[in-house]
Length: 98
View 1 (cartoon, rainbow, N blue to C red):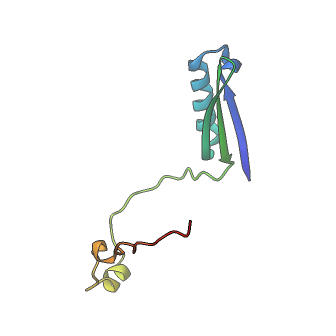
View 2 (tube, rainbow, N blue to C red):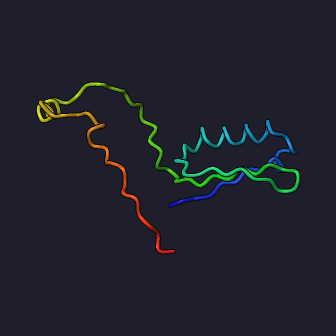
């Protein structure tokens, strides 16, 4: 379920540093899956709004690997992988009805 979280410099005495610390603290403790961030102003204050999924952020450590599974190696043998040949040609000229 999508949730909304808002922060404003007005909550921290107009200080940007307080706003930054609050946002960083929330991100570190909640681990939200951020979908959208919006920054706006309200009077003389900065407002930052987050749209997020709560609890769906995977915090498990991951290891990167460049290995290609054997099944893919076998199925790609002899395949032509040049994407330039797959690009469509130019569209024909068309006269618009208006």
